[in-house]
Image 1 (cartoon, rainbow, N blue to C red):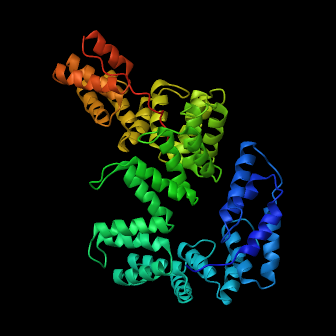
Image 2 (cartoon, rainbow, N blue to C red):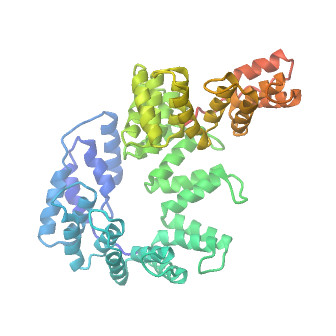
Image 3 (cartoon, helix red, strand yellow):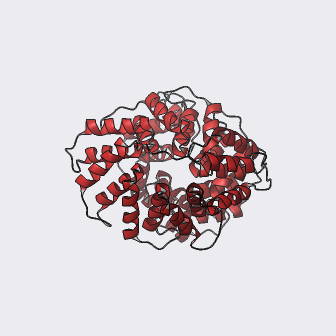
Length: 498
């Protein structure tokens, strides 16, 4: 694998931030991540400690940028590359074309990473005008210098067939060259080609082998995919939680945020592996302090529920708020839920409605359903069946079982529609088949009473027992009142973590 010497850059940055009490300095160091960075673990420890303390020190990273700029101005190609990268990250502003200018200076000295980054910018139109031809030319120049990432990018362009001729065989050759030069991601795409049968014979065993090799060599996307497959099964493979943990752990130890989040959630649930809340929080926090919304949500919910973790409503609020501030739909919904239920603060239905609306507008089915329920009951807003139907229907169209159950209730009780137990039963069935205990109980009661469908004691008992097994207390009482065998008590499973 082609390597680069960023040791001088690394030293300049650390000299500037070593005594900093500003968490953003260490967050930027971890994101900047110079090649061979020597203090990544120390930076993570400092970041977590400062973040836990809600520190707000004076940023010192601008001092590091100034030192790198001075070195770049003296003609250092490596420093020029990093100046281009810093502009791309949005951490300095030397003018509209500064990123391209710095990369161009480095390219004159055959700095291949600058070719890759500028080519990618031309592809995406990031801080420059889109220019597909310029991107291809830069990738080819970098490939000639032995940069394996260039071969992988050229392969992707050949597979897409939009910028250059669609040619799966040529893509395969580029990927082999990238793999032989040490680029782990090329192995991931070789796996994809063998799985699809593009340019090569379709071979699922060989595809799996390439995926494994890619993960072991350093491709975190491959590790994540293997972890997901092991955790959830599929393609005829049985679930293997221990294997999922191993793959997630591999990516986590290399710093992949998605793997860290998945490993943390696996350890929180303790399904098939020992539950370990302390380790789960450690992995989730490493991703959360780098502003990864799924980790922030999971960490917030873990602190809320106290799932093998010390319950802390203030921490729950902090992390749910951080996720919401990134304008990510699920984070916005959870902050609304926190405001409605009083997680870490006094409950505030007006704020809750505002967050629900923001999340609903961004497509969150949970927020759409919660907003619809508020309009249905007049909680925090005027009672409005039409508005309720709008939002609940949007959530149901996304397959949310809670929304399907709510529509069933609207038909059952005639809320904004004509009472129709038969139509209600259809919606309850849809939600019940997805495992929603409320819907299972409601459907069972309709079967028991013969409302909207033919009376059927066997079906009634079946669905109500399912609801009881899911922890539905009314269902358990119904079984007791009807002399039916009691369903086993629900297992003390972990509370839901998003």
